[in-house]
Picture: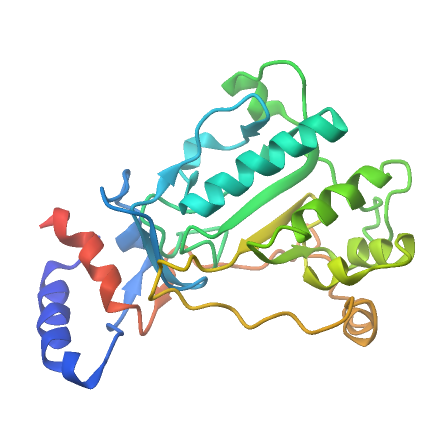
Length: 289
């Protein structure tokens, strides 16, 4: 739970250090953020970095014909306005061109910050997971969502693309995401990135934003750029120039960092502690006092 005494200390600390432009507090934990069920009532602003930050004035992803939240009970459907708009626009474009809706995974918690499990990023309302499985045409009840099959694009050995599933659709979808000017990068499994490199000829500049990362074979992870009005948002460095289909990708594949196997999933502690958490995030706790 949130420690009120520590909060007072941090506020006093910030007053004494303001003149020195100190912008970081001491330690915060995922349990501190887990108490929030609603956002703050103010304009959307992302604060800090993707893996050490928060969001004020987060917006809830509303229900829509063109997409469906897979895990609404997690209360991780909050994001910055540009993230909400991105999901709406993408899903409508895909529905128009491909004829199907999208299945949406986690965004952020109501006030962002670290989560007790599942992610180390997704803290500033600028990350969203989107599943490769297409949204069924039928309306999905909560019970239907629990039974929903989320496909992997890899074969049973998780060593190659499942060619029985793979189609041009996935390349079209990921290119549409990458082409969005507000998108910083897109994380996919290295095997999926490799398949994109094999399939696409000609102008492959869009592939540069498609970044190889372990796991990410049932979903891809979209990271949006900082909004211009979020002065304290820390942008991730730009992706390297080029299509990313060379040495870096080869290193991922050669080192066997393609997947997290079922018995070796990354362990994220139940309570995640962050040091040097942005002081501006501490204002999100004011209504707990």
